[in-house]
Image (cartoon, rainbow over all chains, first blue to last red; front, side, top):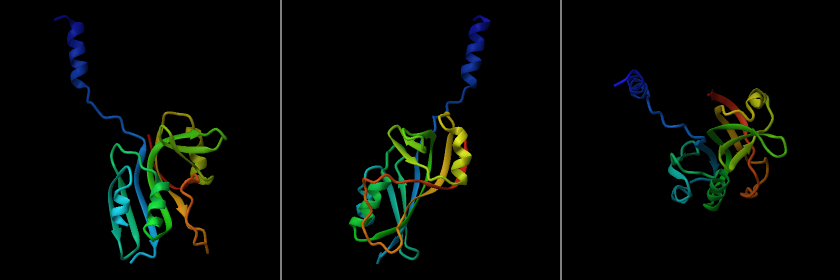
Length: 36
Length: 133
């Protein structure tokens, strides 16, 4: 195995797959009136 | 009301506190939620909304009219009501930076009992910028 392949393996092994955080509404809070 | 809200698209769970009159809605992880539809759904169940606050993550953009807005989905954005907090986000307009903010999307007009117009665009009044990434 040449040095290029070793370097590639090390690089891939060190990568942590982090899911891309999405843009989105995370929480909604409402104050309501007339609730019984 | 809880069941009615739970049936709305993009809603994962609904918690209702009768003591303080608060309703907490948690959206689905990958779902799109429409606050305007939620507002209408609450009114349809016979309860009126005094205030609606959201916590959202998105990009700061400038819409077609040049107003600053928070884009939370490809085709969902909320125009920001100009204030100190929104001014601080102006340099991020058009950049890939993501921000997490808390803001007020709706407040019942004083003295009015009319049903909110679900088709009218909701403006976001920033209360807090929680994170810039």
